[in-house]
Image 1 (cartoon, rainbow, N blue to C red):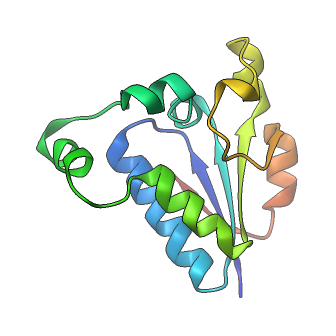
Image 2: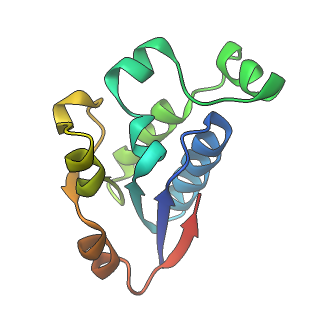
Length: 130
């Protein structure tokens, strides 16, 4: 199978949900999936944001996602990680820029890496920018 890289830049709930669905399905099909969370895409995983469900959101679709019985992106990603071919990385630049620690985030990241390291890891991958 192939390799898919998802650059998760947006903190908008519908984009987070879409990215997690793509990652989950690709992982279940045997693809190696590498997710790089950066900018608002990284901040969506902060403990306080998750606790308050205060993701960026717009309109009734997001309200429906939160109120429905569907698993949110966090649970989709956690479940998909059990396939062991899905890895999620936190952006070191954003952590440093905002003076944050990986302990400020929920326990979902495999490692903290920089852009250059991530690009080396995904040089032969299909890349999705979300």
